[in-house]
Length: 468
Ligand SMILES: [Zn+2]
Image 1: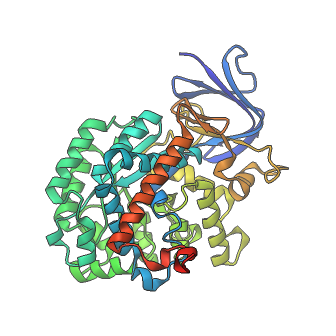
Image 2: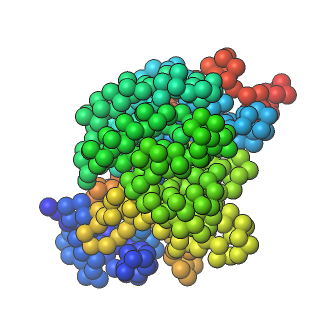
């Protein structure tokens, strides 16, 4: 197997359990792994060298719905509570998301997914956990073709009849519910899952605590245990969800997960924003993981932040939940929110946030060979071009990465030893075509949503509201 050498000014190595920036070392990649870390790499090997560059582990995006990013860009921002009700999940996100998968033809739907995935790979995510409606399985196909490491979790919902709230029940429509959902999961699993170390995984993704009844969640748990698969589910995402679970199941959301076997290692809860401190501590002690998605809540005036979770003993990973899929921006937002909330500059440090976006996410996926650069780890890395006015001079590379860098500073992305972005360009992809076609597909959904009255007046741009 041919060797590939990565040489940059700084390399963020994983040494004795923490990320440590080291100057002037090279990574030797062989057979998809980091085979050596050395100051004298083989001169005759193929070499990627970036003077003034920083190599770091690729990010683990622990919670996302890729098509939602382009679909809701500039629509859900700045909306008043009166336009969205108690939670935009059931009043807006699910209905318009459902419209996208039912109204677009397969090519248009794929274009929309491709636009989202292009943003993902160009902003440093090398491993993505994505929850999607099963009819949008093209995400599995695209990720495989493009070389992105994907944990795909097709949505599972309980039959509409088992869910008492009308808005929640509507969210399940157009998806495969109950047993038909599990049958579809089995089909996708048979077709795409590549096993424990594979690049494409198909895992279990029941939608949320208030849209999934105990029978479904117990079946999910059983399948997960039998096949050693991960489970991911939205938990305590809104106060409405917590209230519905209390009313229908007579208990809190964490107790509900416990009652169906899902309060354990191998389960990734998304959000946990409305959990009490005692509930967060129980999640931490159970070994379950939490995907912390900062900006999707910050934009609505809520402020979940890294320090809030870490103080309760949780080792949270970072997810984007389709609100700007740039992990640098997510780390920074959570960091600033932590500092503001704790009133202390060290409320969340760059080192802690980088750990969350790499090591904690990888551990949640049972992949201790991801999210770190050390001998034997998978060759999943990104290289930042730090020869920029906003990045120089460098004192502490980790602070530079977390507080000052953006996805657009990425020069190179490598996943599983394969270079998929080089000189800031996605290799083998026509980026302008993907952007054009994806944007057209999103606009087509917007137009139809307007026609059906799903598009809040408040989301219309100013020029239309004023008639010129
Ligand atoms: Zn979500």
